[in-house]
Image: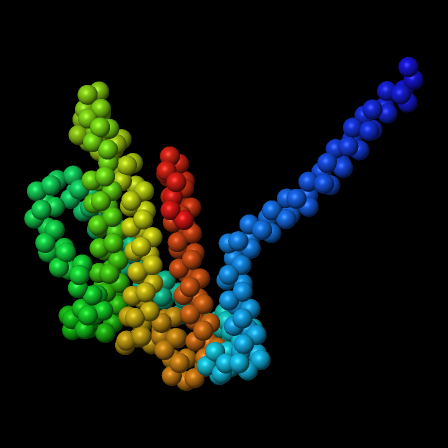
Length: 282
């Protein structure tokens, strides 16, 4: 048998492989496009309707500017540095308050979830505080702490504390009692059972509380910066509205939305890494 006859089947097989890949690529591309449109199609349609209706004069462009005008204002504010300082101070306020809430709520929630007597004693006052709006208490915080950074950080801390605290308590109480009983049967101490059973079982619920608290932190950040602040994204929203700089106002709102999406996605990614046995809530 000649060398030419030996190489011929190989050549045909390689040709069939390329044909198969060529036929598979359009199918994969169509599947990707369908998946993308099923997730973002409504959002894209909403933005397209906004752009067309504003550009065509169907709505007042001075009140609802076109999307491209908002994007231009956003780019000018970021490239020129006008909004970077506001973003930094807003992240500092929200970050300090969120970190303080995490440092207080998670240990307290784990303790209350484990010790029923402590939960029974603290639950009434916590429910009263939880049902009292943080914005309603903001004037009290201003009287006590002044119009400076302390009152702004504290009102954000107050609002973010309770979602995380209650979700932590709920996560501890929802741990399967049979797992705890099995740990005791195998001779695990109370501390070992807490580290190996209670804490891992409560982590998914804690992450739900973290995501709720992160969203609440940004909401209260806007409100606190609209009162008595001269710097921050919330201040820029109000200042642009007062000066009728509507594209800049919407640009600041887009930044707030982007910060919220980034924070939520970061927590979802961290939950997936730490809770491989659990499906995180998207």
